[in-house]
Image 1 (cartoon, rainbow, N blue to C red):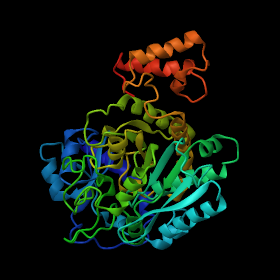
Image 2 (cartoon, helix red, strand yellow; image 1 turned 180 degrees about the horizontal axis):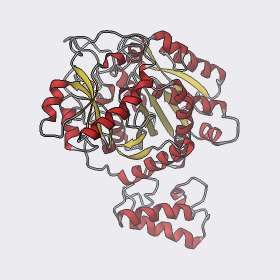
Image 3 (tube, one colour; image 1 turned 90 degrees about the horizontal axis):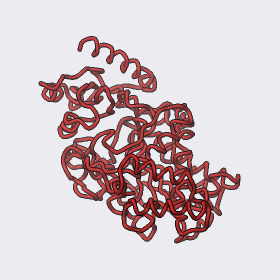
Image 4 (spheres, one colour; image 1 turned 180 degrees about the vertical axis):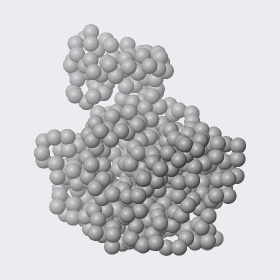
Length: 481
């Protein structure tokens, strides 16, 4: 254990050094924070009972990997939890170096402040007025505007026949790169809208809605005061501040105290009631006012994962096999760009949650919805949230193909596009119908065109391979899309 602990401390300690160079000033920790340390709990593996126990004890879980969980907690709490459970490895005794921030440093970097983001979104709408429009979709608790950029060929119309895809950034204030990726995807769609490629097809065939900063109050506080602030800025009235917006959605809100916390001082505090926060009501209202959305991506960092529901339970959704395929496909596309490995799968790849956006979107609308955890990988400490500006462009570049592909899948008829007999699941009858398509001649104008999974205009061998793969893996009748 000693050699493992020493090697782990050395490796993760080295990873922290670049982040420390970004901190321009230091502040003394408050009395409440003085005992908090950064530690690795080796036994807290993804999906483990110990990881759930940590969450239930309101430990701030920074990242999870095959090496265990990197956490922030008091020594006394870690000692109590660690008794008989394999202990923990101390990584950093004084975490106050992470708790300061500098507005000047942000403004001098490529990251956007709230004001800069608003200005750029307005500039994009002004530069492409025929295909981009800016919508004030709500206000934060402290009264800051929350904007959405709508991108479509007939931007002033709500076209009932076009699918809608929603891209969300910055549920959590400290995850600055989650603002930049959806913003750059929006810019790419506009800049390439007349180039004759995938972006033009997406603009012509779908509505893409982009909300790059859902948590402006928390982001401003992260920029101006406390770099690693996570929640919004609700005054909880007991000396604590903030609600975790990604635990405040209405589906299975408060299901247990492991996936979210009833404690206002916790980083995963779920709030006093479902949708108590104006920021989460923005997404609820945007998706519930007559607009039918086909797919959603919520960007976070970090861990390089593409996750789908459920978060509140380890039981699979009715569409888990299909979502596994979508998530694995997107992860492969992201990885292929720069060789940075992403993994796709259920939320059990990370840890349990409840009241999160993915569960609410799927539980309410039964559409594909994903959380993409951006760079860096899971073997990082708190510095994982402090992405260097040099990561912005490559992180956008690697995530762009997956976003375009999901928009294309929406245009091809997501969700449940393989359910040919509309039974509510893909089964052997659907495969029989599908196979008979080839007896009639691939490419024929058949009602089975909805089985064109790759969107190339014909039902062909590639599509049959998709279905055959699923039945081969999951068994006849066992594949609910």
